[in-house]
Image (cartoon, rainbow, N blue to C red; front, side):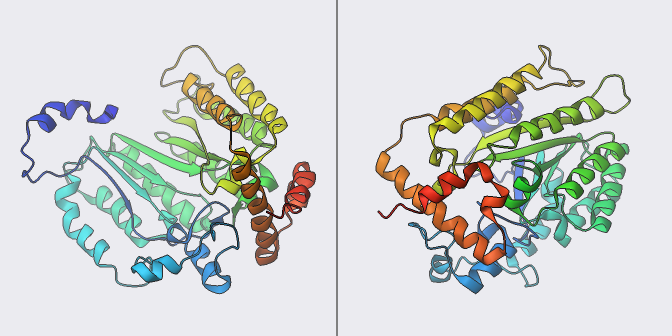
Length: 362
């Protein structure tokens, strides 16, 4: 049902289930190595989270958030990026055959720019005598790697795109709020450097699509308007038809569903007015026409924010909501103790709610 698969409809429906077929769409995470430990993330996706849980254990919420004991029981603890990984070894044996048939290849993580295998993929595409020019290549990155890594990444992106070695190069990055509040959510983020890296990539790479993946959560509410304005300014600067860039900037907003204690549903309903205002602002900054030279927010971008509002005000089971609110206080109190952060300082708008959650006993 995905749009990209429609050209293969006849091949799919007439093939035999025993046929040996390379998939057209592949996502791969070479390791969980990461320099961030975002509040809603998990050890299997972040080596920094794994180090914290190994030291302190899981959080004492009702669900034992990010406890890793089940990984030990089931033998599913991720390989260290410094260890031999038979799955990665098998991938590289498959890659030359897989590559020529791919429609979309996406590297996730962890932080892919900290994985040597990501660089091997980029070098393979750069050096391939007969590159797959129909390939849509995508990389997820927090864009918080050291400067020399970001600069090296830019040079390889430029080479791949300027030589038309892929059909499209998409960089997915993540940001859920603005400034200090974004830094609290995405622990390890230096917001100003992150924003400078975004501008540097868009300024130097003329043929990329950069998409902001927003995991809209309870802590996004109060500075999200600033992020909307920031992304809108990027659209104007680098997506304008008055410039020679062939790039695009998009905002992809998804609301956080788990962990429940960090979702917007944990908040009092009066805070939903912030989300509604943000949807209205995004709609105001939109335009009626969508094209490759698009500047404002598309209807899809706006509707995803409205969807967050609708979900936030939907009916909930009171008993569950109170449990999640109790977990909210337990988690962020322990978060501050472990990481030396200060929740109330970062989110003064939530001080009263945070203190209330700390009084819930059952």
